[in-house]
Amino acid sequence: MKTEKVDVAVIGGGPAGLAAASSAKNSGAENVVLIERGEVLGGILNQCIHDGFGTKIFGEALTGPEYAQIYIDKLEDAGVETLMETMVLDLTPDRELTICSEGGIRKLEASSVVLAMGCRERTRGAIRIPGTRPAGVFTAGVVQDYMNMRNILVGRKAVILGSGDIGLIMARRLSLEGVKVECVAEILPYPSGIARNIVQCLDDFDIPLYLSTTVVDIHGTDHVEGITLASVGPRGGIVPGSKRFVECDTLLLSVGLIAENELSRKAGVEMNPVTGGPIVDDQFQTSIPGFFCGGNCLQVHDLVDYASLESEKAGASATAYANEGRLPEQPITVQPGEGVRYVVPNTLSGAEAVDFSLRVGKPDEDKYVVFKRGDQVVRRMRQLSMEPSAMIRIRVRADRFNKGAGPLTVEVAD
Ligand SMILES: Cc1cc2nc3c(=O)[nH]c(=O)nc-3n(C[C@H](O)[C@H](O)[C@H](O)COP(=O)(O)OP(=O)(O)OC[C@H]3O[C@@H](n4cnc5c(N)ncnc54)[C@H](O)[C@@H]3O)c2cc1C
Image (cartoon, rainbow, N blue to C red; front, top):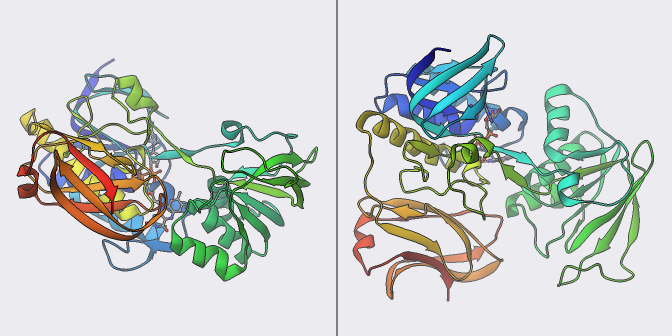
């Protein structure tokens, strides 16, 4: 089989892939190819008909399709080649892609690759809810696809497990379509979604949120007839006597996302066990030179704007690698310290400003995010409130990295 050569291959046509591909082309790569398995570009944004996209970049709350269209137009203006309804089946460490479409199987050899495959949802099997296996149990994203793309209503009385953003948004969407949302149950003692969505999607519709609560049984033979909720104690056990039956015909699961990194793993890219995405440097290059990553397959984003911004950088870096064959050395290691679950990127050159993304381990108020090298403070930034659900973004100027020596630690402190 003949192998076709390209400069930059971008896998995935969601917001991350769109931003990366246009940026790669505009940065001087001659031959950029974007490969998308779906029929249309835009990824998950196509089913997100609510507004709230683009507040950081455009200063207005666009719908998902409106936001995606801006980047589709940029892609067309840049002259990027798109391969639609084409799935990347295999990826080797020397950047050979096996792709499959209606026309059959082809091979591409890329000078650099951008991984932008997004995420998929965790299902009932992943969290092992006991009970019968009736119809009426869905992930929130599937219900969003049914309602917004196919005009199908899945039930009349729903319970939502998980207070992640997609679950909250679906609580509002179902209510607007006349479905009674009995409650949202959340196993953690605090919400998993951002505060804006708690107010706009639950409070405004009088939908109760039960924290430290989970579903311990599903009832019904052919179709869901109800579920059993129970309170969860501080050590994760069920609180005796707390079980209660809730009648419903639909259970929606919004219980987390899994980064789509099967291809990345196959190629041998090193993963961060906390994010489920690749370890990257300040150019968004992974552990294998010539492989770059951005968007939800790097880290789950609550705001699409940041997925686009980091992917623009990944695309420009992919072009620099394709044209020059190497990128700046990365002598400084970045590590999460006290109170920080993860931080991106994981190494940096110290020669340019870096926009760090991080998440804290637990909710807190009036603390500082502190960047340190040894005992030298590189940057301190006050946070009036911190939630694990809200990604924190902090820019550190290049000259600040000169302070101190050794790894850069990012921690929460008083
Ligand atoms: C329900 C929901 C509500 C949200 N609400 C908001 C909001 O209000 N405001 C906001 O700013 N953000 C919101 N977000 C977040 C935002 O939508 C995401 O951060 C963003 O879509 C991530 O973009 P992505 O390109 O990484 O992934 P995706 O949009 O998932 O795109 C990945 C693409 O890769 C393709 N792909 C995967 N594997 C392959 C392969 N092997 N071959 C070819 N193609 C492949 C997929 O088909 C898909 O099109 C929401 C997200 C969800 C799920």
